[in-house]
Amino acid sequence: MNAAIRSMIQNCELRPGASIGAIKALVAQYPCFPEMHISMLIESNGFEGFVGESYVQMWAAEEVIECNQGYHVDEFAPGVVLVGTNLGGEGFAIDMRAVGCPYVNIPMCPLSLEDLRPIGITLEECLKTLHRGLFD
Image (cartoon, rainbow, N blue to C red; front, side, top):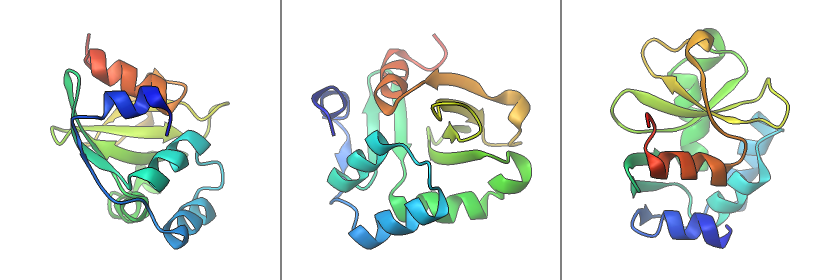
């Protein structure tokens, strides 16, 4: 995890790093999962708290797989991988269909590709957007 990301999540509740098995399962399920996100999971397997102006719950590696199955993301928003939420109806996801796999905001109900909103090319850019406030 780079210093900029570490700084933005310093006030969040961090978790112990993901196991090698959890990372391998995540990458097996989503082969193009961004390396910067994997690096964060290795150091803190998800986190929760305020990132500047936004409340963020970034899911653990295991939760990414479980929650995407539970929300039927493949059915309602194919090619998108949910990675977290603001616990207020907005999801944070990676658009695996697009070049560079950018981060997007997607309403959790109903999940729909029509409602994707770009929030960053990288995890760092995504967190910067959330730090400023998602809807600013």
